[in-house]
Image 1: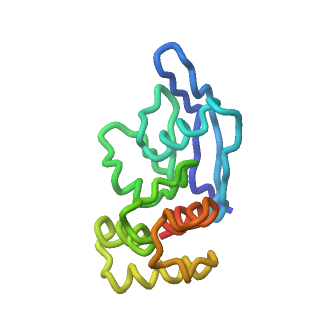
Image 2: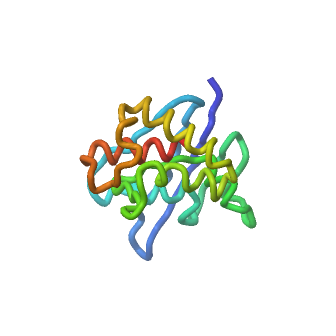
Length: 155
């Protein structure tokens, strides 16, 4: 199995608070990974670094063997390939579940509305939420909202 994402000696501090220290990890193609740990242990910071929302103090992150932390690299193409679901799902409350999933497909990936709707319908069906496609986030349970966020990340 090939390595899809590799973190090599990643370090990140905020002032004197060393949040990540020498973190190394390989994630293979097809693997799904969860970071579980105590509050304040650096899980969100690590995810933010992987998605290039924070800069590393040292170390590197490779996606398909390409260093995505290289100076001057455009982060947007990388972010299109990395799906992350945070503890707070950040669904848009004023948009239907369908629109929460199709927004990035149509606006960022420039897919047609029909193609985006088909993707949303298919993912929601796989996650047991086909009947919720036109609902709004406040009408879903926490678990259902989490599955919508997962569908959005997979889309």
